[in-house]
Length: 350
Ligand code: TRP
Image (cartoon, rainbow, N blue to C red; front, side, top):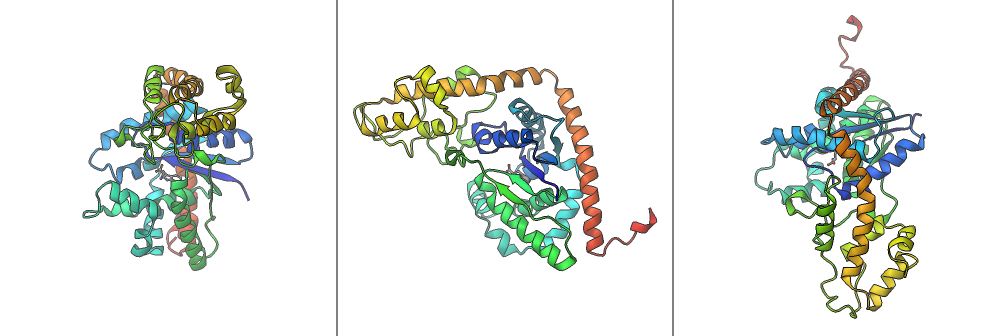
């Protein structure tokens, strides 16, 4: 069986370092591993509209922002097919048939969707499109017969939902769809990067994100004002590294060799953490090192992004090519689905 990747992001904002460590970096590694027969990376504009239907301009503007973020991080359109979800109408058709295979109660149990409903104040006026987006996500994954879906931890319930729908479909109509597997980032601290303010998640509305497109000054300002351990008042106080976002970011980004360059008194992060935990290491010093690490990580991405942003029509061309290719693949799966369901009434007329 071929090994196929499908993954994607909602274009509801620029991508931040949480996206980078949570999935983008891994995608680029998987892309370059040569282990996969096909890689599809989808800009999920139709899904973004499920909670931005009143602001399609925002979604439109962010399609190119997300595409720039992808390419800047190393997604290579000669190796990966980057496409726009709404161009592939077959996905909507698949969604409609999959809707029959899932109950309202099942959708309401999805913990990620549940948390989003709360966060968006949708409790009293829940748009159906929003509640059912995990079904459309199943269509995204299965249309490409994806075996592997590299995502962040918050997407695990979507994968579980997809696997259930695939099993029901295959049981009812015969083996047609492929059951996908999620792959999570390897580094535990990358599963979910907290916001710079210490909140559990980075979110645009909280203003606690560091973006891939942030200038060097913005990165520095954000790092230097990060939330740390509120009980670490004096340098000599013992500090907590486990719930301290500066150390969580270091876990996700710092490499041993950066210690010899910027902070030679420690051989590695474990030594630095031990010092902070027993007391005697100040937050300022931690932040200065973190800033150096972040600047080193983000500078090449930002410079590539600035270069690519000079030719936006080329970005749309790349997306159109990818979207046409994706459409052809999804159309093939849709015809198999209709055949399995025995609703391919006119297939012999072409
Ligand atoms: N839900 C994902 C996000 O919020 C985007 C997405 C849509 C996706 N369809 C997908 C991810 C299919 C993986 C597979 O970013």
